[in-house]
Structures are given as structure tokens and as C-alpha cells.
Image 1 (cartoon, rainbow, N blue to C red):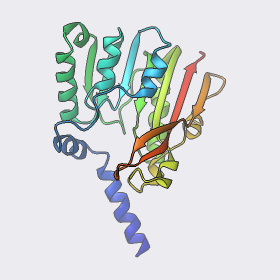
Image 2 (image 1 turned 60 degrees about the vertical axis):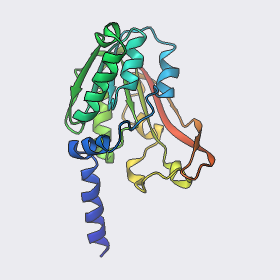
Image 3 (image 1 turned 90 degrees about the horizontal axis):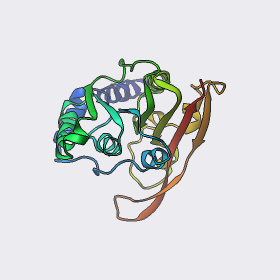
Image 4 (image 1 turned 180 degrees about the vertical axis):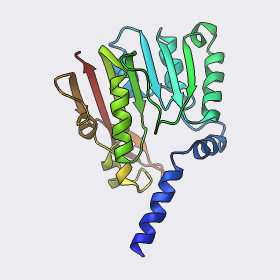
Amino acid sequence: MHRHHHAHKQADEVVLFTQEFWDERYRSADRIWSGNANPHLVDVTTELSPATALDVGCGEGADVVWLASRGWQVTGVDISRVALDRAAAQATAAGSQIADRITLQQADLLSWGPEPLRYDLVSAQFIHLPRLELEALHRRLAAAVRPGGTLLIVGHHPSDLETTIGRPNLPELMFTAEQVAAVLDPQDWEIEATAPPRQVTDPEGRSITIRDAVLRAVRRR
């Protein structure tokens, strides 16, 4: 019985990483996300000079448009065509000066990898995959960062499951910043792994504190 349950759970998890799942998720509402840039991205980039950026799992394009509006040349990648169409519409609405700095690409993050040493900033916000696949993705994203460039990976911290925020009960898909850091060579990277608190409202309307897993690393060479 346990083995059957485990196999069923694995099958359910596989569905979470398909284009069909995410297209349907985006079609379920006119907008899924807030439309605001992710706060950790905003914090990190205020200290950086605009250059080339890669936003992995770009969704409806809030981070892509925000970066482009500040002078970055941005490539946004997502598995969902519905999400990318919305991102393109957001870019167009922001005006040609911003839209011209944006390139959007559909890709399956389980197999896709960016060009090595290509970007000054690589950002992946709240991408959750099975552990081995996630580590492989993080290695590919790290390889895409130029010397002097920044890798920013943010995710749901496992401690969220101890709160009333209502995350799916999939602890194996959550991670700490220290787990992300483990795929990087500390000789090649200046690494900062943190779990900063954040105030949010849970489904019952209560104000609670959750933590994000935040890995910020600068490539030395």
C-alpha cells in the first residue's frame, strides 16, 4: 500500500513539471502572480550596473519587464506558452524601448541549458523540481554566469511547512540556500546563503512570518 501511494505521488509530481500543467494553471485565471518584481531580485539588482540578464521560469514577465525598464538586456525563459504570451503582452504594454530589450524563449527546464559564461545576472525565482533535477539545473545556470556576474536563486524554504501559509505538502521539492550553495565551488564563487523572514497573509487572513531560501553568489573567475 505504501509503495503504491509512493508511486502515485511520484506520478502526480511528474505532472507538475509539464507544459500542459502550467498552461492550464495560467489559463485558470487572468493573472496568476502579483505583477510586481520579486523583492529579492529588486534588492540584489539595485547594487548592479545593467548588463545582460537571464530570468529562468519568468512566468508572466514581471521580473523581465522590471529589469528591462532599468536598462538590462533580458532573456526570459519559461515552459508555458500561455505565460510567455502574457509576458510578451506586458513587455509591449511597457513600450518599445523596454520591449526591445527583452527576448522570450520557451523551454523545458528539465533538459534546457543556457549558453555558458553568457550572462551578468542569472535569476531563478521559486523554481521547484525533484532534488537531482534541480541540482542539475542549478549547475547549468551557474555555468551561464560570466566572471564578476551574479547568480540569484530564491525558493520556498522547508520551514514554510511548519506555518499556515498553505504550501503543498511536498517537502522534497523545497530547499535551503545551503543546499543550493553545495553545487558551487567556493574557490570560484563568493557565496551568500540566507533565509530571510518575510511577512505574508495566510489563507485565513492572518499575518504570519515565512522564510525564503536565498542564494546569492558572485563568480570570481
